[in-house]
Image 1 (cartoon, rainbow, N blue to C red):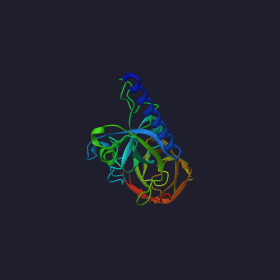
Image 2 (cartoon, rainbow, N blue to C red):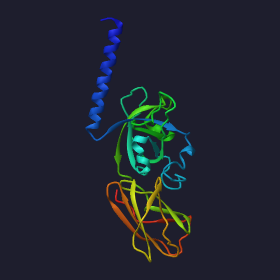
Image 3 (tube, helix red, strand yellow):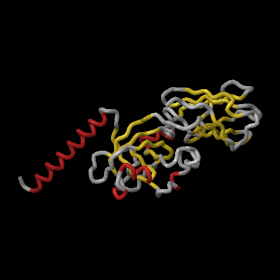
Image 4 (cartoon, one colour):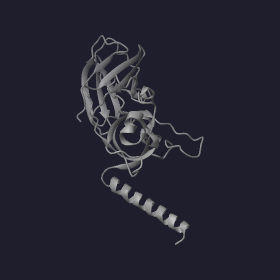
Length: 252
C-alpha cells in the first residue's frame, strides 16, 4: 500500500470511529454539536443579549451561560433552557468533566464567508462564556466537538418578573425560571380582570396593552414541557415600572 492510500484509509477509519462514538453518545440521550467561546474571563460581553436578560450576575445566571446557534435558538423561545455539555472525541483539546449552562443569548449566522460559520443553519452550536469553555477544553483550541443534552434548570428563589413599559404598554421580563427553563406562554391578571393572554415581544419579554395600573398582578407561566405555575398577587397594587417581583418556582 502506497503512502497516499494509507493516509486515506487512516482518515476513513478515524471518521468511522467518530461516527460510531457519536452514535453511542446519541443512544444515551446526548446529541453532537460544537462549541466556541466569546468575551474574556470577566464575562462582560455576555451581559444583555438577545434573550432580553440584563446583568446576568445580578439575575442569578452568573457566567454559566451560552449563546445558541439558529438551529437551537428557536427564535428566542429556547431562552432560559439549561444544557449539560462536555467536550467530546478530541484528546488533544478536551478536558474531563461537564458543565451546565443556561441559554441567554443568540449566536447569529454569518453568510458572508464560505467557512468557519459555526452558527449558520443547520449547525448546532454553543458559543459559551470563556470561563465555561475553559472548564471543558483547552483555551487555545478555539473550537471543539461536544455532546450535549437538555437538563432541568435549578434556580435559587422564585421566578422573577421585571415590569417595564408605560401606562399604555406593559412589558414583563420573565427570568430565573427553574424546571424546563424556557417559557412558551405567559398570562397576566389584575385584581379587577380575568386572565389576559400576553404576547412575546422578544427573547423572554412578554407584553400587553391592558390597563393594569393600580391593581395587584398575578401570572401564569408555562414552560416548554407544558408545566404551568401560577403566582397570585406577585406585584402589589402599588407596583412600579422598573420593579422586580418574585413568584413561585417550577419544580426541578
